[in-house]
Length: 178
Ligand code: IMP
Ligand code: MG
Image 1: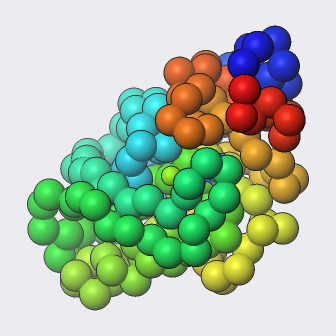
Image 2 (image 1 turned 180 degrees about the vertical axis):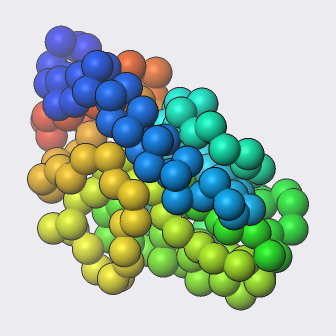
């Protein structure tokens, strides 16, 4: 795979500007609450790491690991693999994910956290692809709304690769396998 074939969609500066805005908004909204940031691994790792440093009110941080994707296709089922490690009961959970696509992942996590006794459950996604939605879910705080394109970078992967790109890029369909 030639990295030059990656098209830049959202540059580093735009990402950091938007993350700062989201952090400010979340700080205002959660100042008087029991904020529990839950990062959905692996895709949201980079975003969540930047986001929590843009939030200035007290917070707890936890992780959850699920999987619904193989390559660039959703399998249609969510497998829970890990977490959260702490009891979420009574906390104001903010689930942070990289991208809201069909909505399967976030609707499943949201339901499970509510069942576990969370005081509230909200979501924060870096990217929203509304045209792909199958399961209705409110994206909550949203970084950017994008078209139906497969994106990589800033935590997002294609078959485990490209998470380390500092920007969001698109991969041409014919390049995905090479
Ligand atoms: P959903 O359950 O269909 O909403 O899918 C959400 C998950 O699918 C995200 O957390 C990503 O891990 C993965 N995903 C969806 N679209 C993309 C994409 O364009 N690039 C990389 N991963 C994606
Ligand atoms: Mg993910």
